[in-house]
Image 1: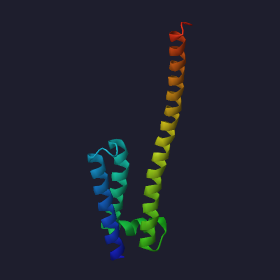
Image 2 (image 1 turned 45 degrees about the vertical axis):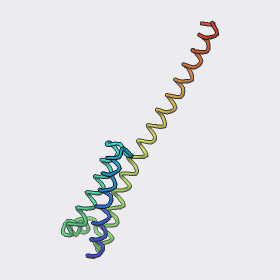
Image 3 (image 1 turned 30 degrees about the horizontal axis):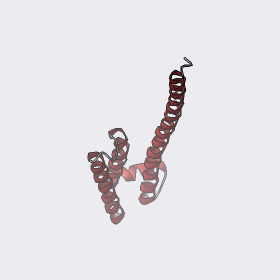
Image 4 (image 1 turned 90 degrees about the vertical axis):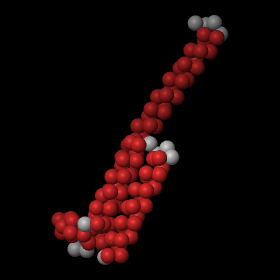
Length: 117
């Protein structure tokens, strides 16, 4: 169990550092980095508080703490992925609307240039 918690801690720290470096280099926007940082902090807290992990495992009805850790980490990252799916869907809709507006403007510009308007 100790080795798993150590590895989980190292992964969480690596994720935090990666997100912060990406944020500093402008590879990721601040509003998107918050989700990843929150997920990494939750992972770090779970790894560093075995008592909390034990209580959560008991509350969930899971006898094995590593299984509970895996379950909770999977849930956190599924929530992050779901949030990004929603953001991507909104961006896709906005992209379609923008493409339609550009097409209308191009049509109007062609008509103005041809003297039809």
